Length: 167
Image (cartoon, rainbow, N blue to C red; front, side, top):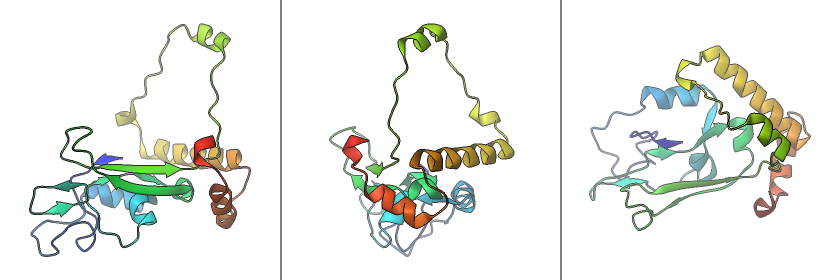
């Protein structure tokens, strides 16, 4: 998620279709080819709404990406004005995703056992195979937590039946 400084669609993600802007940053192509979903576009198929403007041109250059399985549980996605909140020239993309997974707190004994140790993740050193393994493991854990298999219709129904405020 974040500011990618690029658009996915000249027709939908910028206010002027005629522009010299080159489309499809290699990172955006990689995200699409990795079967990740742009949650805003998945929820708002044809809506023209923007996250940045220079006063003349308006563009949607901020995204939240999720795996296909996780994006099936998307409840909503919207763009909120942020100039009064953050002072940023970007608006905020807000997504609600119902996982059905209850947050568990660590027990005091586990906290004492860790004694303030931290885990450092070196994401910049991760190999493509490790990312694939991580995606597969994450999908498996989500399916396990939702107590369902690959049936997308059941996933969607399960997500619709969850109250986001009780998750």
